[in-house]
Image (tube, rainbow, N blue to C red; front, side, top):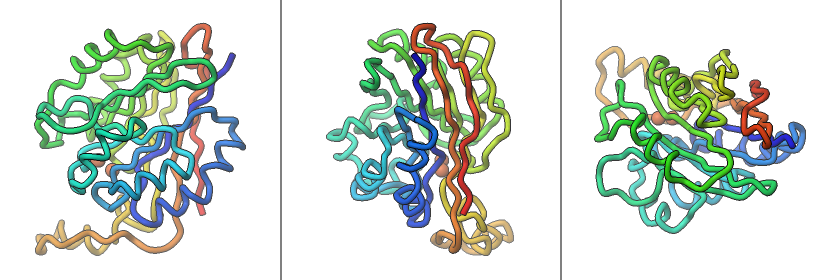
Length: 258
Ligand SMILES: [Fe+2]
Ligand SMILES: [Fe+2]
């Protein structure tokens, strides 16, 4: 049997949530996707509130993953403990709420979703994502494992995918908000893409107003980022798994532009 999983890049702000609400269920239907994982760390611009998380679940996300902005909206803490369908990076070293791995039923399969965060260029107190992946994959009860690796460096993301080749059915990168054109299946059957991209305003710098980003690079006073206006895009990739072989057999981009 074939099982199709749609992975959606970082949802940015109101615009990102809006296009997700309007387009995700029809995209799932069109692609025949059985399971959807959405990175929601930017639903508030930075961070996500419980109400925004609920909205993404209602839009059709089966699981929400997060990243370096997990704690920007600290009110998410209790929700992470209560709602099993939202994950934060598993390799936070501190005693933080929530969990970084969940196992979910889909088409008679147990799918483990892992959320991990890279250490290059991300100043967080993190354990090694590589050792965390080993630990979690060795202990979980599941049929297929997939990984959202939230990381800045393309090198770290590539290394993770090759490290998990044959152990995870899919590894995709998030965080940079820029989609990459390198969908591939590694030799032992892991589907991989370096970055999904983002779901949010097209005419922007990573989802925010270009002038705010320019101001920062010109040495201006830091100010609150505002989400850019105008049409949005939805960046995503579709992974197809052979459930008997427990391997990825196809991976392709599944983007929408408005
Ligand atoms: Fe991020
Ligand atoms: Fe992000």
